[in-house]
Length: 324
Image (cartoon, rainbow, N blue to C red; front, side):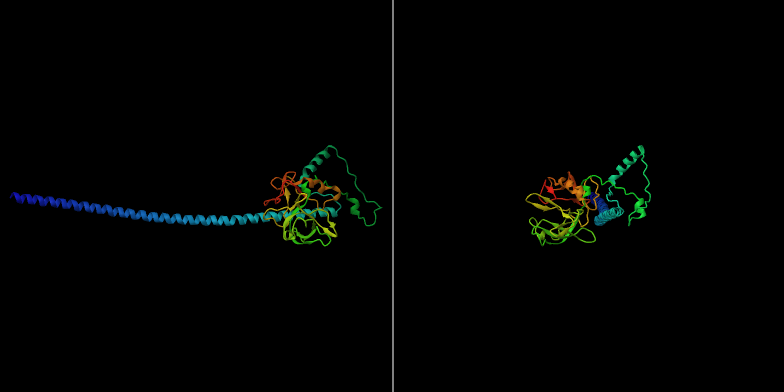
């Protein structure tokens, strides 16, 4: 009886342990199933996040590419429009000057710097007003004179200060070059200056620059010198160079310079005479102050010569030398 009771107790204990194990296994299974579901959800969310990040990166890259490609194009367009407007203004200024000359106004300035002078003159005129006598018709007008020419008094406009602003410096391209038939030291160049037709310019550079270096060269030219014959060929300008007694270098324009680009000096109003009057010695007055500086940059009294929005004019190797 005792043995039978012990067996029943042992069997009961075994059943309890078995149930406990089964319960533990079931709980563990539930926990593992729950963990698997959570892990799967996390993996799905991670995949979705990676996909979203990749999409955003692609969109950002596309946006940057669009901006980078559009910005230079827009900037280039605006710069070109600005240059075209400058050239158009210069053309109309020249037409205005020519119109003034045709009407008898020989000395004419379109410089904006002349405005303060006019205001000062107006203020002085308030202090002392001198009546201007009316010009009447006369019977002894010479043949060919008109009534209008007898009635209108011609007013000369002040030319302004003599400085680099009076010199017409422009970018040009040598489209053809040959040696002067009657002078071994001279080149005869056909130069595109952005005008309707090319200009003929004679330069004494045979000893310093090869003809191959001259061909298709982009350079700086002085365009308002009075045309003059050089050994029988009329020269309509001057090629600008940095120069010493034994070496001459053609000045270098900045990258992107094209025929017709205007050269300006910092701090000076660009208002060139249509044609320099040799009697006024304008070029002779300006020339001594045209030099390259220590960085080989072209200057006038220290003011840098440049093409707006493109860069300065320079020499290849010659520093602190005269420009002519």
